[in-house]
Amino acid sequence: MGRSLRNLLRATLFSFYLLGALPAWSVTVGLLVDAQSKQISTFQQQLETLLTNDQLLLVTLDQLDASKLKDVQKWVTLGPNALTALMAQKGTNQAPVLSLFLSKAKQEVLRKQYPVGFTVLTNAPTIERQLALVKTMVPNANHIGVYRSTTYKIDEKSYDEIAATYGLKLHWAKLKDPLDWDRNALKILNNVDLVLGIDDDALYNTTTIRSILMRLYRSGKALIGPDKGYVRAGAVASVYSGIRETLKAVANWIHNGTAGKQTLNNPYFNVSVNAQVARSLNIVVDDEASLAKQVKERLNEK
Image (cartoon, rainbow, N blue to C red):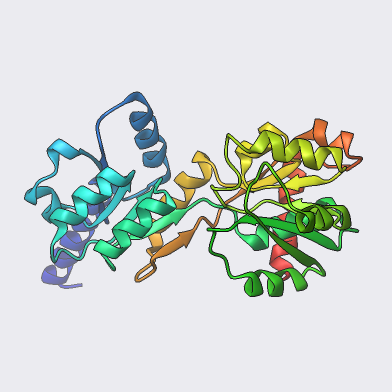
């Protein structure tokens, strides 16, 4: 082996050694928040444990400037104020943005102002997951009641088609007043196996939920959904994506990206069950971990 070749090999091996010894950040990620807090610090620390070669840079609104826009390759924003501030300064910067904890109302406003440029991570349970939960918990269920407010926009036909793949028939009713059900709404309640709650804030909220649950309980009908908070209130069960699932979804987005997607359904979820209510309605349920596993298996079969 010639001296020049040996020297080249030594130099190459030394370069590999240096590269291995130094941290190799693949992406600098900006975590934009309104202000620092204990909860934000915890969120940052937990996200950092899920990132391997990516650098996470915490930025508060008063720190956001042109230099940060230049240094950051991907942005994660928490809440509407952070997203609004970033989009106002972003200009032609093409760095992808993932927005967390954005309500539907705020999303609609910002989407009109900025049609492209950011992806919203939604933790709202999908209809597929909720129906898979229904069939897992109540295999003999066939007829499902679905109530909505008069202002809620939803593609009933699409829901009906998805339900049919699970052998379920959806029965729809609009409620002008969630506290005063009309004859058609009561008729549907009497003829369905259970009720599926949907993400309709005008119908399911802290003011109305107690009355709705009492009406369903007196009729011997279970409420599935619309989210984990309603399980604590008295719904039998719901699929949900919490902070742990949110962190996993953010880390996955940072590693893999979702170019061009306006909305990203959180791919990670769990199941919450109110065992006491389930027993009172004669619904036999497994533990939450086992139930979540069965729901995921059922979804994978589709």
